[in-house]
Image: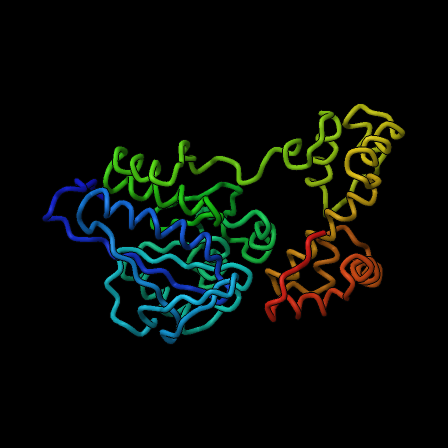
Length: 333
């Protein structure tokens, strides 16, 4: 797309549509819309317009229970320069033939399609990310990868791949939209927009979504962070504590003491919690059978997985999945 001057009155405003899923992330949505509003204010003219969209044109409640009025339904005439799907805890609520057909029609018309947070699930379900690189929130990354193998899932903050633009949600939506503003209107306007949000470092697409292990877990010893990273990288086929210690060059006794002192858990318990947290992600964001979920998280039998999961979550995997799909968010563990 050719770059346009933000002060050129002959350039028409670009209309961006935001398709809202039930329980979408209000924060990520605001991070996507507010840069457009500020760009208009700083340019002293309307560079961007935005329209909220729902299936029937009804208001949509976000995950914080605040409702957003939809400007249009998917049946309204389309004049969008691009469309982004905004989702959160229930991306499967957009697994609707009418929505998939509407998105495919937009794609055939050459409209760039994007996703914010777990909106990538809706695009992937419609077959619109096959052969594309795409991002999603780190919590649902493995679920998206397992469910849609034709999509090249990345852990990046955001991805712009030809006519597709996707981001991890949260503040990554702000980074992505600043990038969109920069591509259309230049660096100076994008930087000025960022400064309005007290945003001193605009992140690039390939920056990490998550903190480093030491910062995230509050651990000090490098070997402890290394063991945690080995655990996180081997959830489907768990390593033994001995194998972890050999890889990190530390004795099992020191490992046990370090985990209990800094994390208040044994290495085995910590590792098990990681596997169960991954299982919860699969239960929430995919329709994988419980057996496949168990195998993907390193359990050898459904019975063992179900007993362990119930002891950890307080409810059976199938019940927990149903509760989450009814709008009950998973508890922190």
